[in-house]
Every structure is written in structure tokens, then in C-alpha cells.
Length: 549
Image (cartoon, rainbow, N blue to C red; front, side):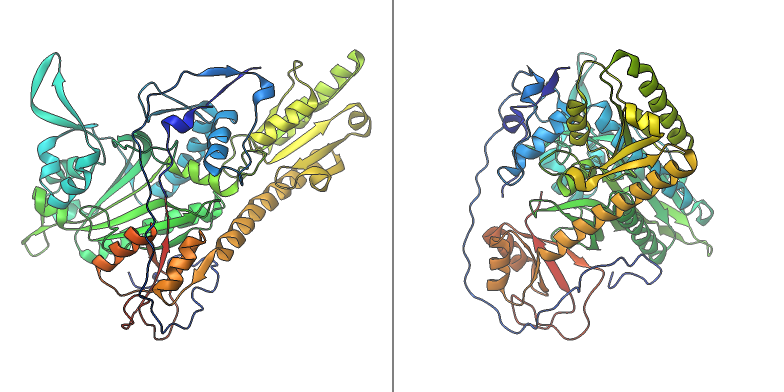
């Protein structure tokens, strides 16, 4: 079987260059000791890192590669090429004819469906209903909220001609939906009895990015966006925190990614929001990925659009709002968190195929018995709710199949040969433990033995992936107490964590001189007095700085 590779994706998708503590009712997940340094000093010198950007070239022609060319660049050699090789060879995505767009292939989309299944259930459990808004938005809507239009103007895709005629008003192809949502909320909300109004939509979004990377940053991507309206600021704040908590649990429990949840700085806050909460994940190259956000919009959009209600005292008030989203960039996060030189390594809870069965025979008279045993094992596992597939193709060797499904990140492999059929047993191999160490012989085919064994191993893999990612994250966060130490940490490719109370201009100075930004002020904060690493003034919180995607 030939495979479509993306050997020249690099020319199309260029990687980028270089409120207080969470309420006790929210999730507290294990983090390393949040802050360990005793800070008192600050530095006065800095070195400027200059990064270059170039305009993307047009998409190269696809080339059909032979199986012998199914090679993955070592991660340590070139992280970006490794990432693109995995996307191509694991058949997650291809790219579209428009520069910076991608086609999500069935295997990649199946991961997105698993993400959808979990989050959709959680959204409904927390009182939200799904609906859909048009993707075309009048440009005048975008202009109504000043900071919103300023923040999104460079990324807008505009429609000026429709039906062969110039439109009276240009239309924006949805970059996000706060404006059109407020337009409709204004028509639906009249009284306090109409609140809270809590909706979600699964949709596509267009943002005209100049530097793109498949899944992480593309012109068009898929996401869910939640929008809610409330009668009080307290309800809106509780909602914003509740949804970042949902995302945090998802990251830890489903994706096995140990994100750090916290509040964005004013500089990094979503355009039009009062507060932005985020989950930040450390990728395998130690860059940060903003994996999900939840915004407390205050009354910014409701005032711009006149979204009001009559309260219980008969007074007209503007609603308080939130919006929150996770997108297909999370798939990129899974690749870059767990993948290795062999390829993908998928957490079992999100894997489209949790168990691949590879039947093995040499002689013609062995074929029927082996395939019957494989089918029986598949039926047993499927009945137990395990996502299982048989690779019974006869054009490939067992060794080729082993490598192929390992590259696609399937958590468990079951091998069945003539001897296994005779002994009514199977061989089980773990994706996360390579070689003989991850292989166990003689596991009974009986349902009462096989099902609990497979489920236990899937749970072990899920926990192992989280533990490995957490150890990697914690070993690459440096506690700093001066600007010099912050620069040193960033120069080493690590995250820097230290007290911060400096100005927006000083935050921008850090970005200009190091390429790092404040990823968040973590919800989990150390106790005791602290001094700002930049100014030496008292600081109430520590911030995390890192280079990011």
C-alpha cells in the first residue's frame, strides 16, 4: 500500500519562530512544588533574540511515496520535520490547495470525534445546549466592540462579492462568534427569566494566519465555542472557571496532558474580554501550547450590542457573558506531547483503535484457524466496549504491520499465531514500552481473562503517558527570581516561573528580548511574600514565562 506523504509540508506550514487561586470546588490536580526560589535580586541586562519570518510559498505537488520511504525524522534532530512526518505517515491530515489549509483525514478526524464525544457530554451535563450560528458575519458587527476589531482585523477573511455583484456590506468569514451571538442574544433575552442562557456550537473558524502549522495554526480549523449570558458578574465568573475546569479535567483524564491552568495577563487577554483563563501544555520541544481558553467577557459585548434584560426589580441591566473554546489544535498537542521517534503514541481514551490484532501464519492450512481465533478475540473485546481492529491483509508481512500500527500510535497489539491458537492464548505488546519489555506471552483468550487484562493494560498506558509527560514538564520548569535568571531559563529552552507585578510595557520588553510571553498566572500559587523578578516590588503572584506556538 502506498502512502501519501507530506515531504514538503515545511514549505507550506512554517512553524512559528522562535481569579486568585482557583475556587476550592474546582479541580486541584497534582503539580510539582509550584515555586521554590527565594527571590530578592533582579538583573539589568538582556540579549535580544531576533527571529526571521518569510512569506509562505504555494503548496507543492503531492508525491506518492513507496512504503520504504515511510521514514520519520528523529525528534531530537528536527522537531518540526518529525511532527510533519508523523502527520503524513500516520495519515492524520493532508493539505488543501489553498495555502495554509489542511484536510483532516479519517484517522485524524476520529481523534477529534473522541474529543467531541467527551466534551459534548460534559457541556450537556453542565446545562449547555448545542446550536449553530451562520459563518458569515456583517463587518459592522465586528466594528461594534473596539478592542475586538483591533485584535482580529489582521486575521479577517472578507467576502465582498456575492452572486456576481458587489455586496452592500462586506461580510466576515467567522473568526469567532461573540458578535453574531450577541446580536441574537439581544433578540432572545428580555427578562431575568430568560437567564442564564447557555449555548455551544461545533463549527469551523477562519483566521488568515501568515505562519501556519498543521493542527496548531491553520487558516481554517474546527472547534467548539461556548457562549453564555448571566444576570450577575458572580455567575459569569463561576461559569468561566467551571469551563476551564472542564478543559483541565479533559486534558489530564482523557488526553494525558498535564496542563497548567491559570489566568492570562492583561497583555495576553482575549480581545474584548475582562479576564481570560487558560490551560497551558508543554510540548516535546518545551514550547508552550495554549490548549484551551475560557473568557469572562464582563459586559463589554452586551454594552456594544445593547444586550439587556429586565431584572426582578424592573430595572434594565446589561447581561454578563462568557465564551470558551477548544479546537483541533489539541490534536497537535497530543502528537507533540506523547509522540516518539517511532511515531504517534495515543492515550487509550482518545485512540480511534485501542487494540490492533495481527494474525500470523505461514502455511495455507494454518490460515483459517488463526483468522477464526482473531475474529473470536475481536468479538470478545468489542462486546466489552474496546475499540479493536484486525489487520488481516495478506499483502504485508507481520513485521510491516507491527511497525505501521506502532507508528499510528495504537496502544496495544495482540498477536495470534498457530501456537497461540493451539494454547488458546495470545501475545500482547504495549506501544509505550518498546521491544521485548513491553511484550507478554500466554494471555488466555478466554473472555473472563482477556477482557480484564486488556482493560488493565489500557489503564496502565493512560496513566503511564500522563506520568511521563508530567515528569518531563516538571523537569523543564525553572523557578527564577531575577530577569537574568528568566533569560537564562528561556535561553535553555525551559519555562521560567517567578514573581511578577511589573507593567504591561515591561512584559512586552520580556517578549521582545527573549521571545517568551507570560503563559499564565497559575491558579495554584505559593504562599508567603514575594518580590517581582523585574522590579523588586512586592508581588502577589508568580507567573510562568515560555516561548509558545
